[in-house]
Image 1 (cartoon, one colour):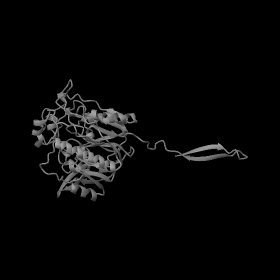
Image 2 (cartoon, helix red, strand yellow; image 1 turned 180 degrees about the vertical axis):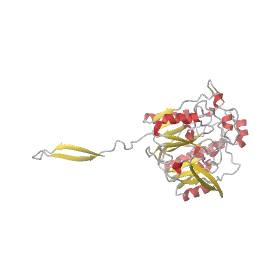
Image 3 (cartoon, helix red, strand yellow; image 1 turned 45 degrees about the horizontal axis):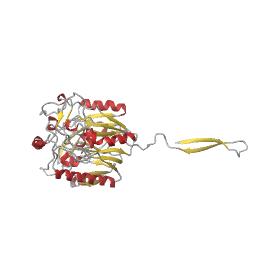
Image 4 (tube, rainbow, N blue to C red; image 1 turned 90 degrees about the vertical axis):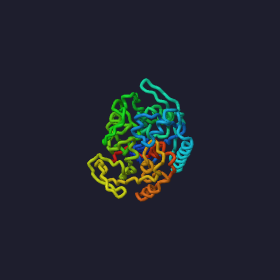
Length: 402
């Protein structure tokens, strides 16, 4: 932008007017923001990485039964709700892997922040429910979502996670003091009317949470500029999605997708935008929403895929089958977090699990630069790199991409 300066030349016999041009920054030029993120792939500048220290096995409850692998149900029934932690050796190894992820991100030029170490072994009681202990601070992606210059605390649906935000409050307050907007979504009461008493066994998806009050996990939403995509799940209801849409206003549009995932929980292991024009999908949870009908091939089988029309010109990549042993202890989630739950540092660099050699090979063939990081000891806690992080600041502006 040019600014024109006018003054009289005192040496001119006719007092001639002199015009000078001076370049000044545009008012709309991006200023430094404490919190700023609009996509899943803009260059990452600052990130929160979770902690597993102080984690505890949550009590057996229908909300967990809906998503926990059936082979782990006895583990939760025998160990949950007793103020008991996970295996000490596993916690130690997972903590070391998180530390290794931090070092890797710092080496790539990213500022890393951590929540407080919290002892989750204490139980708590409200007028509406009580639970024997909490869970962990391992997954900041579930607790927090950054949209633009605002950081939002999610109203999560598990009782064991009711106070999980406390470990992040010092960081959030710091960001607020530096200029970020901060919103805590309405805290759910979590009375018995929020949950169905049994898990539906029908072919069609039915959430274990009712519409009694708004609930959602932040990991249920993925950002592509002005458009945000989500799914209704066992931790996110229509009420919660509607609350977030109204809160964000007309500047953003939230699109609800359907994957007919009977164990649905968190979209970032199912539908993963890698950069503009490139989308990673989970072959076991193909999208059913949208007028753009196409197909993909997985293990020699042709499968149908329906996407919103706005993805018609995007390249669709299929996450490879994870190389985890069949008996690997995954307490909370499916093996697909090993190959689908990746973290984009920018539009080319992607953090991937070091043991997933086929995944690494495919990312290279797709034009990305994979950064392998060992993370197998963290996977049992319910996620991988995307779950274990929350991008606080990316170098990019609000824009309409789709």
